Length: 171
Image (cartoon, rainbow, N blue to C red; front, side, top):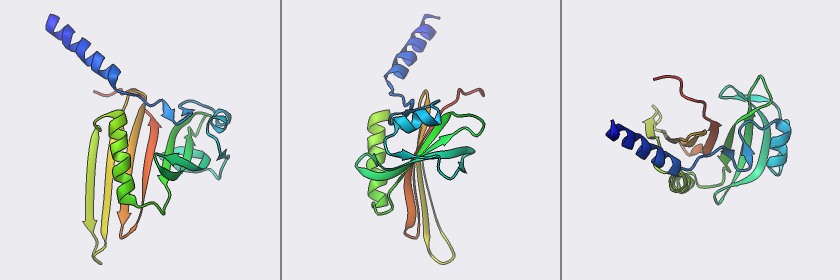
């Protein structure tokens, strides 16, 4: 019993050392549209509303900085209420994708520790074009962060998506 208690205390102490993200930059989960506009300088909106992962993109900010890179941030709200739930940040197209991905990956590892998952897939189509997708994910207490590099024959993107993490209700 004492051993179990010591293990629980050790895990709790380790969990407290891992940084958390309660939003992106100065935007925090749960903000209203007006609060998010005030929190993110240069944001404009409401923009043409479009769905992304079931959420509604209602604000955009460009240019923003993601590390040393110029990017566009899209702030996403719940469809049924005025509640910020996610921010997708896409690196500018002129930035070299491979080096941006590796640089951001290292920066996120330094800030949030070892990723929860790290996946890479590649496939060649019948014309010989190579498609590559790399995805790294961190599951923190309040947020999930996903870094993605997608490239298809020289066309692609690098993005980081910060989203509010709901409590796990499954075993």
